[in-house]
Image (cartoon, rainbow, N blue to C red; front, side, top):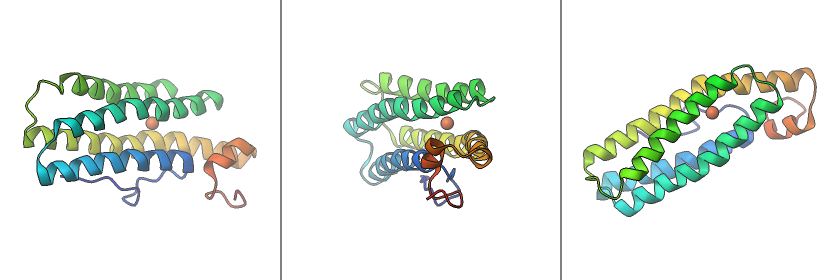
Length: 156
Ligand SMILES: [Fe+2]
């Protein structure tokens, strides 16, 4: 079983994005911990995947709006990665009522989600957040600075 933590090199430096990632991490870790200790509960699994479905709309929507607003050149590539998570979440949720919730299922879910977030944040989100921070450094933009808050000198 693997666990997600912002402290494991997963901060992007844009506070609103890090806060939302933290929210994903808490839900995923809590599911993993319960499932490892007590076995997978169908109800908990449905709750986790429903959360992932709903919260990803909000979170990916925020990232997409920022990429569009600041004309990020990697938008299409980034969205394709978001769609992979959505497809996995949608498919898993659809099968939850009938599939066997074995320890193996638990491990598969844990590995998929932990790996997706780890790789996505380190490789895909970070390219976007570096780009946004560069823009903010060149031409101070209050909205962007507020989102980043706490990272750029004098941005607090
Ligand atoms: Fe992303």
